[in-house]
Length: 413
Image (cartoon, rainbow, N blue to C red; front, side, top):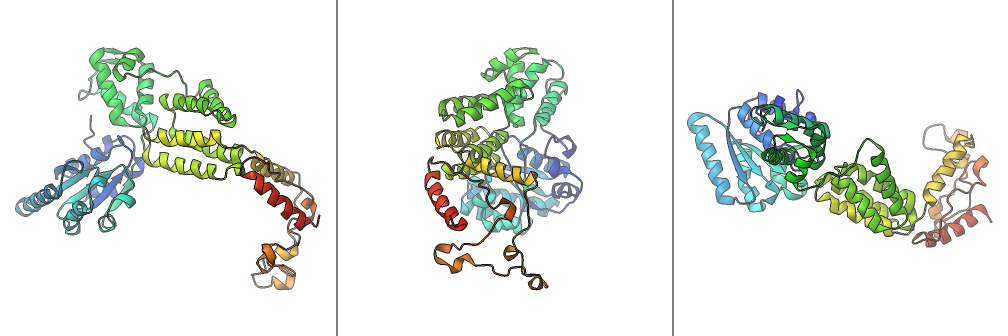
């Protein structure tokens, strides 16, 4: 079912539009070098194959898992020989290129520099960390995205209908199609593998057939219905209640049902500030790092990152002082408690500001002991208001003590 033309490729619309580098590569005869970076099953090998097929170039594939410098040089020598004898260009595709060591990557440089081949390297890891700078600087870097559910659904429907696939010899129940989409997790290759296995078991493919083929039960979970909201609600409340086991259960339910891991990661980032806050300032750092990791590597490995953040959030001391503080401040602003910015705090850099008295009397805190100086900062209307009321939980305890002393000093209390 591998696409034969760019128009048959499903997904990656940001790379396939008119005028994009990939389109130009296909439409021109000039060799070029590029890296395809993205999660498994998003079409890296497919795009390399399509480029070769459409441009009628030789397609030579090398796996960085098993190839050495000798194999790389042999492939380049053959490409040069073919180019010299027939004028036919070669697409040299290196899968898992991040597994090449420096010497192996160095062996590619002459071919890339001299345009002896159209080099395409595929990687699931960040090339800025795994590819040598001279090779990366001579290449275009194209980032592939995980396929959406609609994309995977289109892949499966095409495979059921077309002669290259099942050719209509098997029927796929709507519920079974939905289950295959969930199991795929944005990986087209995985979805086709499960479909093929299911078709070997029965001509009428139901959820039960898919469960047998994939050896995975269909988690009853509707991402658009009540179960979606119930499970994510229970997930958040379990972390808030510090029950790491329950939170991990709901995390597993969402992952196994095919919930978008980026959605889960976003909820954890929100939780880190909303329910943990400054009681453990490292919790937000962990949550943001995990969100980036999930975006980078996807599933299934990303579930370990998510579990890391869930356990940290669940077991961290809790404080909602931050969310209450911004809520109270926003509430006053909506009520009209705004007032004028004190004159000594106004911008005094632009011409004419001095004549208006902007900045007059401002005391620079760094010029005073402990970096503190008593002066009015808030508008007069909200000067008595108290927004941030820290708890004594975790790391927020020392913050509460320090803030109480600073506030008393600034207010002259």
